[in-house]
Length: 419
Length: 101
Image (cartoon, rainbow over all chains, first blue to last red; front, side, top):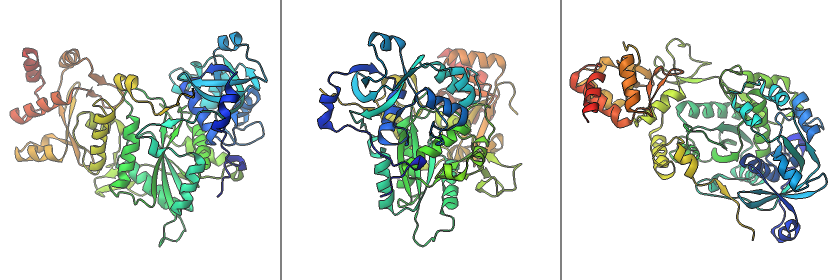
């Protein structure tokens, strides 16, 4: 089994065996962490962020901002930091060299070896990573909302998360997923990053990317798969509910719009920074670690508002030397509906640009809010039905996040009580 | 076609067939892959009245330039008024009915 991840480093799980946990954490000072830090802790521990072994120290953050690398020169575009209330550090007398216990929702999460305690210039990070300091940018707001003190150092999970239905069947660690990819007989895997319920435009993006990735391989026996990797992170009112996103993607396969031997849906925990091109590189690294060989990048990938050009996330790969990244970007334009062609078609092929009808998320959302079933050329009927079923089952009647959903939804994962 | 602040009533294949039978299909605009829309005419004053009546609704100035987030059953009533009156000018009648409860 090949476990070589980003930066040519082996994907290793940093999880303390259950039998050793009680003794190791018994006397440790406890530091509660935010939801984002908990998710990133889990990612580091299972190797989603290989080669990271812990939260970054000051030197590492500076390298990421200034050179888009880790301190050792490995390509890395986004700081991964643990922010902690200064008062916690002061009152608990945390110092370099300490081992501490990170807790989340009052349960033990991970052990950390404190190697660095530092402050950061958030403005400088915003400029370098996000390309803006505008407070309207959600990544800037996230950065500004961090505490002012940061801890750097290696972590090891002490309490593996228990994923709750319906997410449990879609959760694979990188090592587990690589095993599944081999079992599937896939030699190439193209990643589709998503935070959306799939309409036909998304479906064709995936199909087009599959053709690109499959390339010159023989077609009698297919050895290229599509990995739909749904991003699970913080939600805002109006977003599609997480449950609908994963279940509707799975439904595309169950309803045979994709063959089940070339399609797989999984989840990844990640708090989007909306960093546009830099985040595209991050996504490429994440999917490298999952075992993907190709990654689809469409228009406005990981962007927001008008902070980035529509294809900045394509162009940044021109600046990355090939040996720095194992995964190949598959660059795609838009798929639209053409009333002249009478089909969903590719903007790079269809010459009827004047007559084109774009897949607008806003328009589709408006149809769904009105509970008017879209035509099957927009939304597969099975997907619409699954969306509405998910709304009833998980969304308190709505397929979109409401205040009630955000306050009362079941957690994606739980940390079991250790004692 | 629509003046001021339109209300989009989505027309899928089922609704389109209903409008066709009544000879009203030409009132619709083709928007996306066979999905059509009826744009109800709504004045600025009527928009304000609607938004007051339905606090969760909003006028989407950024993308659709229309009144959004009206309850689906409200839009269904408006659609039925279009069918009954064979006209897109139904907001005044709708508001009158809504005020009378």
